[in-house]
Every structure is written in structure tokens, then in C-alpha cells.
Length: 303
Image (cartoon, helix red, strand yellow):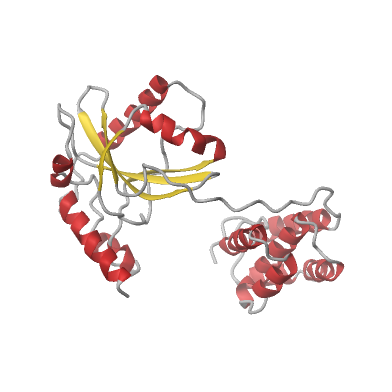
């Protein structure tokens, strides 16, 4: 369990429980069913984080019954969570903060929520021409051309996930698919035992230096329109799948702006990424990488 602060959701377990609860709740399952399922086999070290997270979720949707509330109250009153935290190595500062947070938490969920959270319809998958494998070209600030490859994307009506891999192309004319296939990715991690030996074997095919983002509904509606004003799709590679990590800064789709403003912000970001990684390249060409993914995907499909 990863813990970074003393709040109710200041740990990985509670956040995971909250995410699963609302994913299943929005999918139509009853809160009591979800709660019973998630408490069926509790790990001792995570027990209270699970229960507190569920109590909060049940309260959010107006389904926190008196029996479960009493169970939570007894845990807090008897300081069971604090005793476990101390046993696991928490210092006095953490315990003091945790105690205060638990008191506020209990006070909050003891009063029925006036407007319970309603179910939200799950996102509906939609098609996008910027799907995984899309190869786009663009112009840097100095007018020379570069290219990106779309990877790790998921497209829905209410949200968009995307990641782009920056190639080392910088040429005065518009690149062709042949140019792209002969180029390399600005990232050393693909097919690198040095980078990936400590991870699961599936991460052997992975990239780190991605430009990525997560967009909610308002920005998702602008996603393709803004991209079309700056990028041109010249073809498609195979689906390169997921990235294990990515750059924290993506392109600015959120703020309403003109196409020229979008172009300025994107060229600035791409130029920065290129210049800060001048000597970082995959050993394999993009075509060699693509052939490996084709073989890997075919192997997975045959199982």
C-alpha cells in the first residue's frame, strides 16, 4: 500500500476502491452488492482504508446504512486505524493528522447527504482518425518538418486519452511514410533491457518519453478540430499499444483559442521536447519497431 498523506484518500488502496466503486456503480450495480464484494476478503494492513473508502462512497450515493456507519464509528472511537498505522511505522505527526482527519470524516458521513451523487452513464467509445498508429507531420517554429506517432490512445464521447511519440525527423520538405519508417523515436527505452528488466515482460515493448494527456468532454470536443489545424495525417502504422509512462505536459486543448494560438503552444512544446533530448534515440528504426509490434500482436491474437 502506498501512503503519502493522512487524509482518507491519501493512499493507493482507498483511491483504487473509490475508482472501482464508481465504475461499477455507474455501470448499474447496486451499492450494497459492490460493498459486499469489496469487503469479502480484506487484507489486514488495508482493512480500514477499504472500509473508510467504501463508507465515503456509500455516503456519496445516499446509501450509507446505520449498521455500516456504526461499524465505522466504532473503529474510529476505538482508534483501531491509528493503532494499525502506528504498528506499520507511522510517526506521531502522521498519527495526529490522521486522528483529526478521521474525526472530520466521521462528522461528515454522520449527516445524510442532501443531494446524493447520481449514476453517470459510462463513456461511449467513438472513432478517431488520430487513433493508435496514426502518423502525423507538422512544422516546427523554423519551418522544417517533424513527425509524431499516435500511441496509447482511447477515444470516448466524454473523454479522450492520447499519447504521441516524437520522431527524430527534422527536414525541409514534408516527410513521407518512407521517411518516417526510416527514422527513429526520441526515446531509448524501447526494446531496452536496461530500462525494462525490472518490469513485467510486457513492458519490454514500451516508451517513456511520450507527450500525453487526458481530456474531459469540453476539451475532447475540440481535440480533432485543433489537431486538424496543425497536424496532417499521412498514414498509419500498426497499433503500438500502451506506454509505461509519459511526459506530464500535453498540448493545451482546454482553453478556448484560435488555431494560430494552438499552433504556437504546440510548436513550442514540440521544439522543447526535441531540443532537450538531442542524443536520445531508439536503436531500431520505426519500421523495425513496427514489424516487431505486428509480430507481437499476431502472437497475442493467436493465443
